[in-house]
Image 1 (spheres, rainbow, N blue to C red):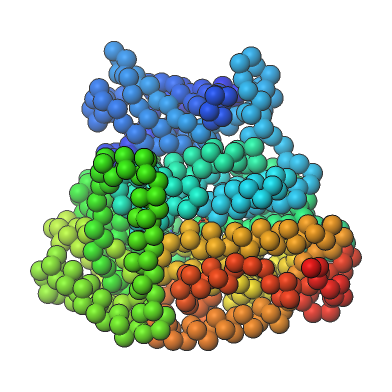
Image 2: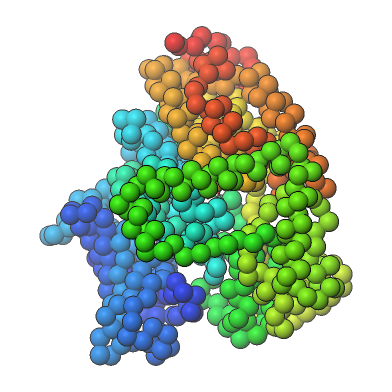
Amino acid sequence: MTEPPDATGYRGPATLRLAADTGSFEVHADLRGKFEPADGRYHWYGRLAADASLAAAVGRGRAGGTLRTPAGTAQCELSDPDPWLRYRISGVSTPPFGIDPAAASAGPGTDDRASRVQRHLPAHVTVAVIGAGFGGLGAAVRLRQAGITDFVILERAAAVGGTWRDNSYPGCACDVPSHLYSYSFAPNPDWSRSFSPQPEIWRYLEDVADRYRLRDHLRLSAEVIRAQWDPATARWQLDTTVGSLTATVVIAAAGPLSEPSVPDIPGLDSFPGPVFHSARWDDAADLTGRRVAVIGTGASSIQLVPALQPAAAHLMLFQRTPAWVLPRRDRKITAAERWLYRRVPAAQRLARLAIYLGRESTVGAFTRWPGALRAVQRVASAHLARSIRDPELRARLTPRYVLGCKRILLSDDFYPALAQPNVQLVAAGLVKVDGPVLTGQDGTAVRADAIVFATGFVVTDVPVAHHLFDGNGVSLADSWHDDMAALRGTTVAGFPNLCLVIGPNTGLGHNSMVYMIESQLPYIEEYVRAVLGLGGRAAFDARADAQAQWNDRVQQRMARTVWATGGCRSWYLSAAGRNPVLWPASSWAFRRATTRLDLSEYRAIPAGTVSSAGHGAVSAGLPG
Ligand SMILES: Cc1cc2nc3c(=O)[nH]c(=O)nc-3n(C[C@H](O)[C@H](O)[C@H](O)COP(=O)(O)OP(=O)(O)OC[C@H]3O[C@@H](n4cnc5c(N)ncnc54)[C@H](O)[C@@H]3O)c2cc1C
């Protein structure tokens, strides 16, 4: 029986997934925890009731994984089984249960940090950050370093981590090497692989929240439903699932890839088995020995398919468009390397720089001379030919667009998995479901026990834009008319005192998004300082003409890129056929463009003035 969460933990059913992808188990957990003042982190622990299949998988050893309860998901470790094979389970940081503030602070031996983690929302804050992924946590660290401590981080989920909390599908890992795909200010010498797996990246972000003392600012399970600019008070009014507050500035870091996109397939409701998206992995669905249909051949699918193939009885992959795949060359980072990075941090900085420069050296081919990508295309063709001997299958896996037009995928095990006898490639999109029968656009019909949608995310119609409203009550989504645009990817005319982390045209096809996030942070800090410099009597709005000029320049550059000329229709393109997602130059150029806030691109609007996309408002002149 599930008991309501209390101050000390949780008792009830849970799903345990082992990190080594050796299966998921329905277990009964008895958990409790407390803050340890010594390290300032929440430590939780407990026992799992004896379970024969779990004991068979783990034996007397140790194992890591994730534990999901109805109240949340957390990383955990299993150890020390007792004579009845009841495993000890423990974890550090966000626990998979709620912490009741009143009881936690009242009990002996509890630290009042517990109550501060889940305490009620303040009536007003200087800055409200939306989202606790790489973007929101990075912004929060920057605010603290700038001495701005009156802020909250509003996160709809029960734990920090964003992408790396949500994408727990088997095989999930980054595709930019970990030494680069991490904050420059928080190097991790202990990455286990060049492309570290999802649990490790999630743990890294949990650690960042601890190391940079962000827990006090976090409000978990607090989804922002509506944030509206109030011109009378020059403040944002935010309504969340746990209450309301006002903020002088909002930093929206709600993620470019946080809302799964599931196509509307006729008959899907009639499917009798489990159906889920790769970013909402269902640990309870045991796919071992089942007929599994995977829909889509993008970045998640090529990681997922090799991980599922050995366990599935039959795997059917629905492919609308084939992707170009290059060798990944993932490898273990040796103990000696890790020792070196711990002892000589400069060595890790050098490794990071080398990866950055290596990737950055390719940017011209994407943005200026797409013809140069033909040479890389030959490498991808050879990679395909090495693994797929069947010429007919090879033909169906060969893209008809120039490499780079869609995201280039990296994998060493995707093609070998497709060559296995239990895998069937349906070279067509899924168009119909009728009970257990799935039909592709080419008429191919297959029977399946489970459907996994690896169909990506809602990208060009950013979900958070439907929750942000200007002073006239017009949503950012409506003001964008399906075609988003911002000034320097960060601020939007008509939406004063608002910053977007990974806003329009900040995405990369060739390098780390964490680099782009870190490029925005100094700009955002200056912007917040400029707003605070107005003393609360006015707000700070991007000029519509400056925003238009910026976007004209961006789109001019875009015209020459492979994303515009490569002959594909990618998820980067809006309904209008414009690319509002990617940055069409070097990441270094973006960093230069966001090094300083150019005050001439902004205007101050006195409190009480209704602003409409930079038109008709009284200009109060700019400070400085
Ligand atoms: C499977 C996968 C692999 C990837 N691999 C790479 C890679 O190797 N290299 C790379 O550069 N990029 C990669 N990316 C892109 C990745 O999304 C970014 O690198 C980065 O993680 C984005 O961070 P973020 O904080 O902006 O967004 P997210 O990590 O998505 O975090 C946004 C947070 O906002 C929260 N949120 C959303 N709406 C609300 C709301 N209304 N109220 C409160 N909270 C809200 C979400 O719950 C989430 O926690 C990958 C993406 C995916 C999906």
